[in-house]
Image 1: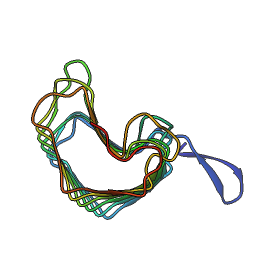
Image 2: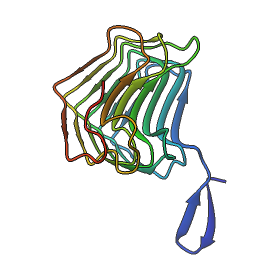
Image 3: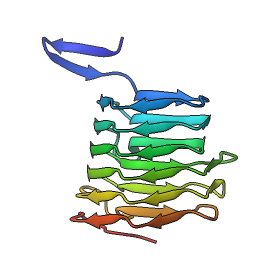
Image 4: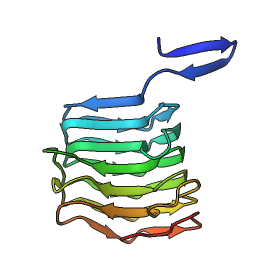
Amino acid sequence: PTSLYTNPGVAAGVRDSSVQLNGKSYVTIKDLQLEGGNDIGLDIRGTSAQIVATGNTIRNTGNLGFAGGVLLWNAINSIISHNDIAYTNGIGIFLTGYSSATTSGNTVSYNTVSYTDGISIAISGSTGVTNNIVEYNDVHHGFQSLDDGGALYSHTTGSGNVFRYNYSHDNGNGDSHR
């Protein structure tokens, strides 16, 4: 089942992700409203490539401390742009890879990320996380609960990752880190 009903009109989600792409290529996720993923709103992983996510509204997702809005894990040459991501209990947009995973050549741009309990946009994980661009994003009211990191965050990555031209304002316990 996709949800458990306890009262008429009240649903509790039982899926970890609202949408998950695992090992997919050349997929466009456009103009959707994604709500209530227990872990992640949009989960892109498993050697996925050439994914475009644009114009989506992603809200009320995540668990405290991990990805809540969008996760790119072992994903290459994908575009996350013009999305509205809010009220996540974790990271708004998270580009990561552990062990031998490669998360490279992705662009995160023109998104609005707000009211996150943790980091708004993060690049972190391993030396296989390389050559990603984070630009022209508006991040605000991030870091509502956590205090280790910042609204824009990069830690333990490979080379060539770039944060530029982002607007970070009105954040909670951190504003920018590393």
